[in-house]
Length: 179
Image 1 (cartoon, rainbow, N blue to C red):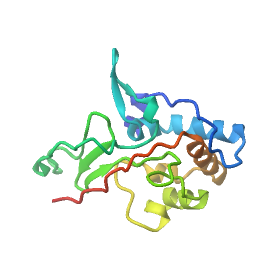
Image 2 (image 1 turned 135 degrees about the vertical axis):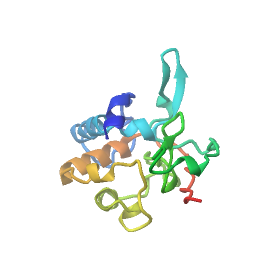
Image 3 (image 1 turned 120 degrees about the vertical axis):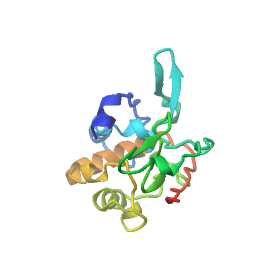
């Protein structure tokens, strides 16, 4: 979690387009939680700025870019006596003993993001570390166990914020199992 908090990409203002009846106060609380939790560090692609890589706010929380090919990784370097994990320059793809994981699209896009999810499914996912609360494991480096301790009220606020974002169609690749 420390890495996520120290990198410091900004989270843009919500669009309030798809708030689903949530109040502006609840959405603002969710934005605060997403910013403090560093969600944008891994779930927002980066662009090069005069100050180095920065958040591509036009693709806010849309996950690993579908059109970005992962650089081949020699899994032999990922051993307990060597490197435990590696990431791409966007921090949206991570490789480790679990294989390669790609950050999810957290926007409310109905086909590629969280647009069809309910707050209950989101909460269950964050509390169990399982996709949709019952599916495949949510892989590292996602700190779902840290998010799991949020109160029900904070979980609802975080979900309301994510639902308030501009939907972005971005079909994130499925995880690649270890070789």
